Length: 153
Image (tube, rainbow, N blue to C red; front, side, top):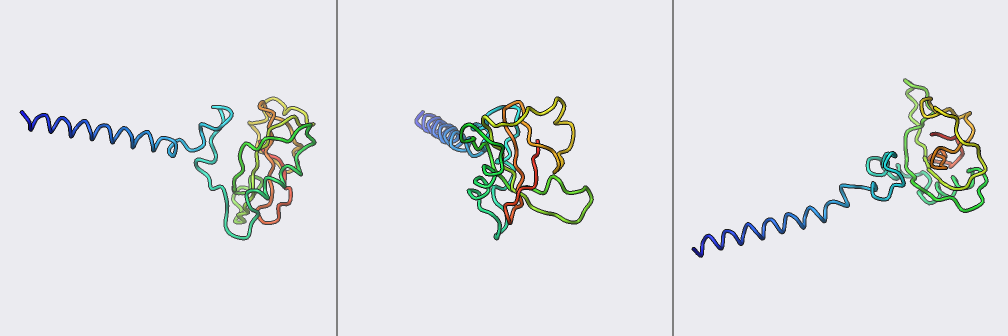
């Protein structure tokens, strides 16, 4: 009888420990999904690196540069995310692989809303800044110099 109680107690402790481990691991597995403003958006920081190789702009410097290039705003725009990505304006099939900072900002910008169906077309460096449905824009900067390259959506 004592052996069965001891075995039951061991199983109970094992289940409790497993439950605690799962609870502690959940925030790491979820990435930044819980902090994202809209469930329709992809949580970029859960899958992409936040920084690139040495020699480029820091995360904070990229955010500061993006705010300088963003359209005029009546308030300080909120930074939704900032990460290093491959150049979205590079021609397909080219061997030149340039890194860029993409910084998503939201705020009361002095910019027009994006035209309907804008998500269906690839971004171009000649595109004007336009506000998506969440009043946001994505500023694309050269990874090393911080020079403005364009807007994506």
